[in-house]
Amino acid sequence: MDILVEVVHSLAIAFLAAVVLLMIVITYSIWTTVKGAKHFDEKLPIFTLIVGINVVTLVAIQGLFSLTT
Image (cartoon, rainbow, N blue to C red; front, side, top):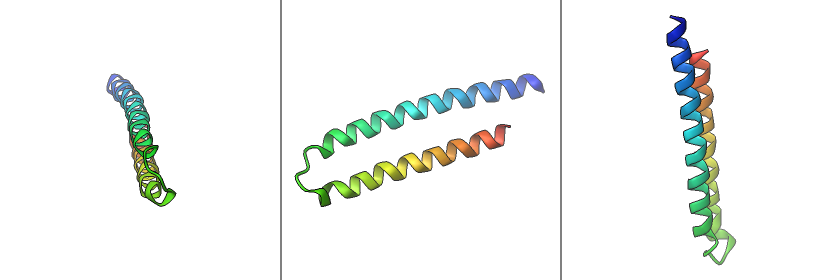
């Protein structure tokens, strides 16, 4: 049973690293799109989207770790 716990922890850490990398890539790509927008009210929904995606992802990761420990 201990081996299974170690495998799940390793997978969770790998998943965390992949998700953080994905969040960085998504944030950067949306940020480069936002730089083309002229006014702040055009940028605000995109910033809200970035923050929302990151918060939901971090909450999901925290839930995953609480399940595995």
